[in-house]
Length: 158
Length: 144
Image (cartoon, rainbow over all chains, first blue to last red):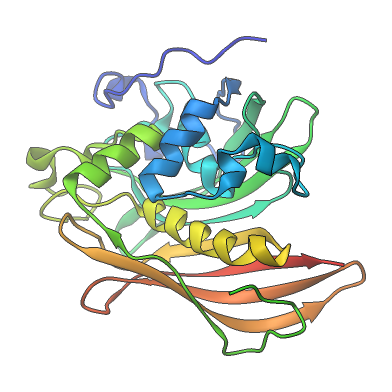
């Protein structure tokens, strides 16, 4: 299975190749990339929000829990959203404003998991002169189990 | 404090950790989340307006709020053998460098279904002026 490409951190670089609000088709799948979740990526995410629970760091402790080994925090999908999409994905358009999200968690993501995303725009609408897109996302592990599923509302840049 | 499903009541509160927001914390969250949107990094870009929105300066990533709420929920649930199963949030006010934010929760309801037990929690993130910057709702499962 293909590994994730080198991540492009310059969100201006491919700005012209991304779909604008007019081109986004509700229901149309977004291109995605399988991503191998690493302990290092989990540790960096944990550091960024102050997560210190041993379930994320201490293998011996994690083995004694219901999870039977290390897991990632549920909200690791925040990172996976970008790790699993290419540089021309419209979610990287500069000026994209996140208005809210809802997520349901099933099985935890774990270090070493090859994670796959199925994602699409689900709806688009105009409200108070702002252009909104609703997107939905489902993350799977290699066994085909659902890690989590979620929906978000973004205001698109004009 | 470790809780049990039986001991919980509507109105019980959950306190989360306070989080000091700085340009460095915002940058670290960009690195950790791989979200390098100029909203969080580019002062010049943020002087302008886009999408009928103007913030006047860089803002913290909204999902940083989400991560803090999630951390509060899991730190509360794990010792009880409970599982964080859902979180829905909306951002109501931007968070800027220099702000200090803190998530908290209030138990709204308990429910027993055919195969498990659930707690619904109203969550909120407030800044140092007690203004609400994010609101939402979480679900935690207490497995039988």
